[in-house]
Image (spheres, rainbow, N blue to C red):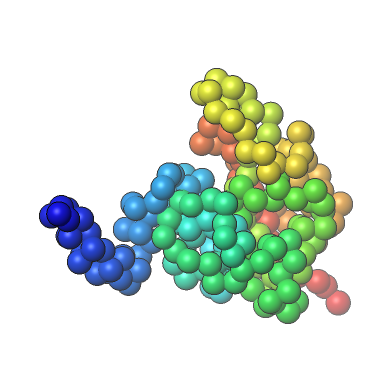
Length: 203
């Protein structure tokens, strides 16, 4: 015999999901498998996500429901109910021409790539002059210490033992294509945040 609760889920589930999709990410994210990293910084970083932009590696919970959602066709993170719109490797944004987006936002993804500099160059490529690159990432050493303290296994996808705000700031200074407009080191237990604006080329 089918339980009443199962009948209710079967009947009401599609209506609840449809209502959530129509009325914003906050309701959707309440049904996620676990808390997304983006949910920790959204209040601080969403104001930088103005205009047309993309959330790279969003894992089900985008920074904004207006952002283009890019992730693997089957993301390894499950932090919300939003589906992937563009499926593929976010280190190569082949869907976009040069200088077409107002912002790129990415949370806890950049550290997964071996070629940090190459990925940053690619992400800056698709931004309009003055556009924002918004990063929220872990400090690897602080993150590993947090995992040890809390009995958690570190994310095996992280590619750099020395990944940090300072390291990324140094790489961006070598690229010399963006100006820092906001940064905070070690927030929300083990993360850092950085916002840069793509430089306007002077003729």
